[in-house]
Structure formats: structure tokens, C-alpha cells
Image 1 (tube, helix red, strand yellow):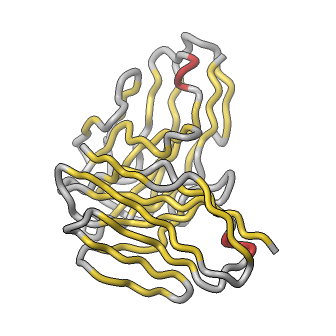
Image 2 (cartoon, helix red, strand yellow):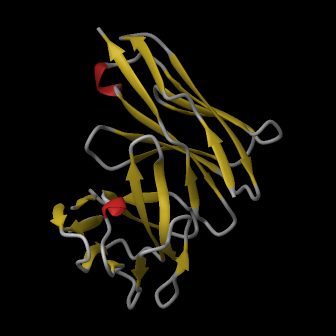
Length: 109
Length: 112
């Protein structure tokens, strides 16, 4: 099975940077995903890492260290619309995802 | 339609009743999934299907059943609903080659 931990809540100011950490312990690893979920809506895909290192997509970046069982999602130049829950998910060899409980990010003006 | 649709959007159901949640995708994805999302617990996998004609159990399968008669449809059935099945249910699909999952809009189910 998978054990995935991420902080419950984070607060940051508009224009700032926030880093959301995710640690995992897995019985099989085949990639790590980050999803964004606004309140009352479905999760939407943000990023995917399967090899160690940093993946950058505009204001969002995601990092993976497989040896440490660690990932982070970096949100730069925060905007009010970035207020949402961010879900870390680990994929196993059967393409099933196990999700962390999510980190609620609140962006303040 | 484009993507994944779910029906109904929300439902209030008496305990003991049978209920089927519908999920349809038009992306020709091989794999489909059902999750439930509860406050503080995140998304938990109920059942999945890697291809039409096959299904598998996820983390929390008890009290639920699924079928996958074709590529597009993946209904979830609660044979006899109980209050602990009150949750938001999300259907998802993926192209098994990439693994990125696309989610439907969800069904909010309340069992009284």
C-alpha cells in the first residue's frame, strides 16, 4: 500500500511563493502526480514526475526525489485564484493512484 | 460531450435503497476509476477497470459493485445504501499509456 503525507493547510500572500511538501512510503512506485481542486469542483491535473528532478510548467514546478520518497509543488507569483486544495498522488504499477489528504492553500491579498 | 460526465449531480437516498451512479467518458480511455472523497481523508479508490470487461477492487470496495460492459460506461452500484456511504463520488478515466487521470464533476450522495 501507499502512505502519503502532506500538510493540511498553508497560507500565503498574493505574489509570494509557496512550497507544498509531500512524503510517501510505497510498495511500488510508478510516478507522482499533483492535482489542483477548487472547492466543490473536480480535481484537475497539474504535474507529473517519474524521474528525479524538477519539472517546470509556468508558475508551477514540481520536484521529485525517489530515494527520499519526497516531492514538492512550488507555486510562484501567487494569485487569488490559486486558493484551492492541492493533492499529491502516487501511482503504482497497475496505474492506480493513491492520494494524500490534500493541502488547502489560502492566498490573502 | 467532451470528457467525463456523471449523473446524478446530487442525490438524497434512504438507507437500504439501491442506487446506481452513472459515469460516461468519450475519450476512448482504457482505464476508469471510482473514488469517494470525504473531509480529511482525501480521495480513496473504490473500484477500477483497466479495460472493458475487467474490474478490480480498490482500497474501499465493500458495499459497492461495478461493471464495465463497454469502453465508455462505468456505473457504480450501492446495493443497500448505509449512512457511512454519504460522500462525494468522483469517476475518472485515463489512457493507460500515460496514467494521467481525468475526473468527472462528481456526485454528492447523502444517505439518511
